[in-house]
Length: 103
Image (cartoon, helix red, strand yellow):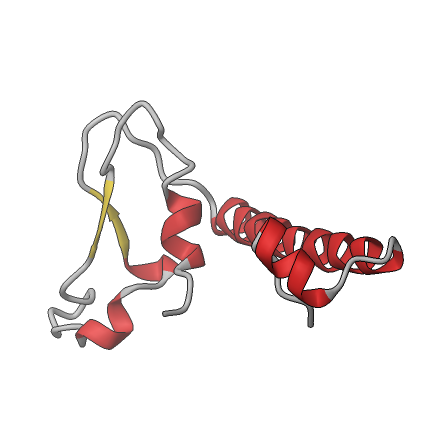
């Protein structure tokens, strides 16, 4: 399953007001928004008093930060695997000892 970066990012805002947002079900003209089209920035609605709406730029910046963290983590794993191999460990030793598989 793909990560839902939008919701992960939204959870980092209004941390003192958990579950602060929901998704609009109807557009401004009263038309029902199909479920597969509801989860985007333009359809966020605040459902808890005291919460504030982050800007789209803030949300997008947080999404990019989350994606970069994931990339950095994968790069670190790849680097660690290579360093262990360079030290003479076999693929099986790396896998068995550290739970890392070599790409």
